[in-house]
Length: 202
Image (cartoon, rainbow, N blue to C red; front, side, top):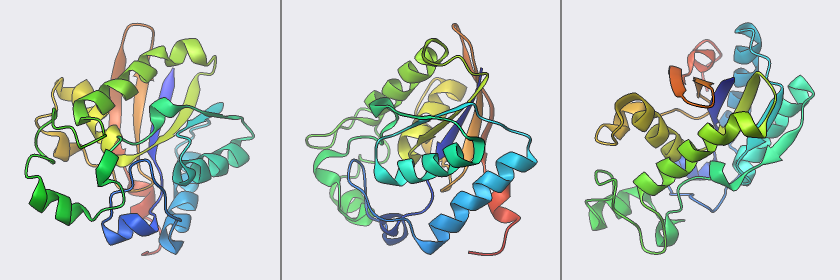
């Protein structure tokens, strides 16, 4: 099975540097264009998802809906694809959190108040990926998720560690291509964003 792990397009809070987590904000005009650029990129790459799984958060569902309409396939919502639960940090400026909690960006075990650690979030997504062949019969599947949990999962798959998690940042509306069977999950490409670079400047 091929799985496209897709980050949602830019939102108002992305642009403002605010942690969204389990909260939500609208897509920006740039974000709406990014979504369409992603569709064009998938078409040009000859990628044809047979199903879409999405985080239930609105910003992810909007991207999932575009994909489902393009490829005439169903959407299945799954909480395993949600962003890391930042607990009390949701809705706060990322710059403020870094000042108050220096361990926030570097310690995979650091758990925000009422939230989950980066390691816990990564494992949640990895568990879902390994279950995916049992959940879906299609050869190619689109999975719409969120930035931090995606980069953590990719770091674990490539390095079996979160020490260099920042290296695996995914821009909005970028994706990673995975190959999955019942025993393995391999990263073919990660952080694919060429479809954004080829389009008009945002």
